Length: 222
Image (tube, rainbow, N blue to C red; front, side, top):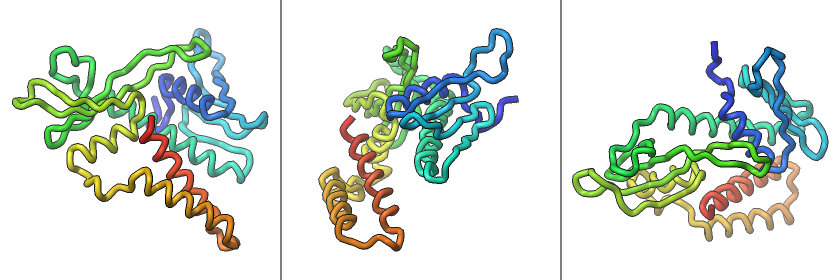
């Protein structure tokens, strides 16, 4: 029986690709030795030539070897959760009922704004097939028979969700920090790191905030 948190074959392929793009070594391992079974059952992750963690795809768990790696392991766990969320949402969504766009699925709809995606087949640099979900937001035409004004986000799931929330009115744009504001905060944090005695543990907080700002700015520009 498949466990709730298990990492599917489709997700493991995407995960290995994403980890390698992030600079990690990621190796697919099949531990069962069953005949004609080539599924990934474990992913061994390395960094700078040393073992960092093992991802058990069957159990959906991660084991790591050094406490100093916990922060990065948590980021990898967040990546897995994000990929699983995308797969769940796409699998359970209904196809669009618009001529020429029926390969898209409607992930969310509010106030005549649609968040949709389709699954795209691609080949990575190692000539392995890696599918991805491509995201877009549209406004519905009067009568709901068509859509217009598409904002396309490639595989940028977070950016598409943010755009849908603002565009549909779920989230007010005035409540969001602009990229200029985030960069100003980032610059201020760097100065604090340089000037303050961080024995109270604030260095770790500064680092986390910086990483979140870097990630948010990356999503808004891709």
